[in-house]
Image (tube, rainbow, N blue to C red):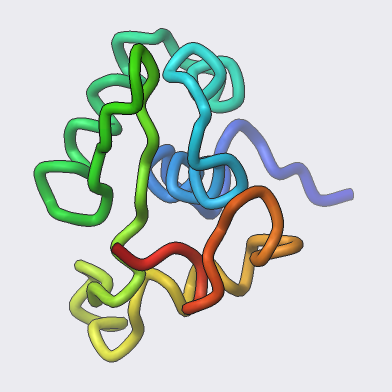
Length: 108
């Protein structure tokens, strides 16, 4: 029997992008629960993604709405010919549901 241990193939940053791709109106609290991290860690992850330009945060009243910049290339030097949107399309179940726009995922 092969034991996987306590690791996964996707980083918390990638998992956060997938979560936002499925629910652009998600709260940080929901993201933290989904990733099994603290809200402070979830905030740091979103700050990293925003600073890197992969996510644009739009204030909508008291809530934030997140837009993934799907046209940007991956940071990984091996995969720079792929965009973040192409990778997310592989993992997002119904990419056109839950308010995700039709130019793969949500482009702003």
